[in-house]
Length: 94
Image (tube, rainbow, N blue to C red; front, side, top):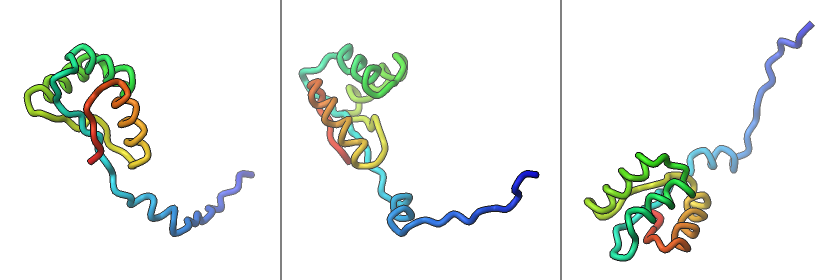
């Protein structure tokens, strides 16, 4: 006979606060030294965008000067900032 009792789940204060942490955005900026192809390549390789999405990002950065390409915890966004910066892209965390 299956156990039909429900178990109460408890959380620590730290776990509860983690659910409310502020999200950060990784911003890709327009610059004079990266090609469309390189930006598209990096968006596909590191951020798992498909080619169409990556092309839209490249055009948005070109036309508007910047584009948010990732949203997440500071730690997650910072990891990708470092990766993309090593690829020569101009990125910042907002």
